[in-house]
Image 1 (cartoon, rainbow, N blue to C red):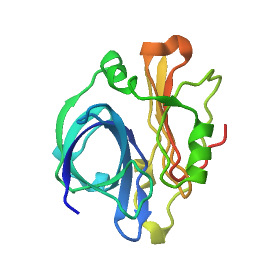
Image 2 (image 1 turned 30 degrees about the vertical axis):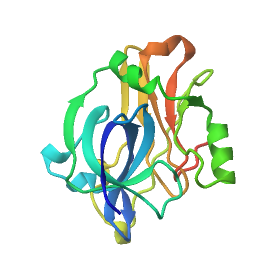
Image 3 (image 1 turned 60 degrees about the horizontal axis):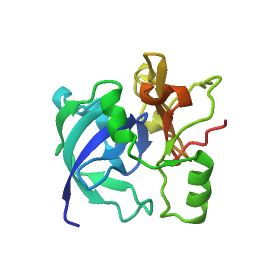
Length: 206
């Protein structure tokens, strides 16, 4: 399949996972901004930990790259990136510039996402969620890889946590069932606004 050029605002970088097909890879999600309106996009595989420094990108970087639709993945947002094709264009500073892009996406709920995806494999699997309230966050250690899965330094595996002007951003690594990440922003703090990118591999209990 012929590739196409895409411009993407990176919002999620999942924990690297072992893959028999691709080795040590990460799943990346973001907002595609080269079309008429912003849309979600999932990029996999990316061997992020093995990239040279200049090829690595950060959350909220805008990158340009070549992508191809993943026919083996029924989820509509899933694309395969052409390795080493990306260029970092800029990093959007917190939080107004980021919300200007993300706030254009339609809102949903995690229940709606999971219900639709269970009924239809091509239903949206990434979405923007405005929670009514967040009274706590609970973290559990990710199980270490077995020697057969890679045997690298576990200290490199971590959950990102940042606080900016009273809001939080956390990325939850992918496991075997669903992948979820949360990114808060101050533009709508009064509503407890947050972005939930979900339903890939690791089940998340509320």
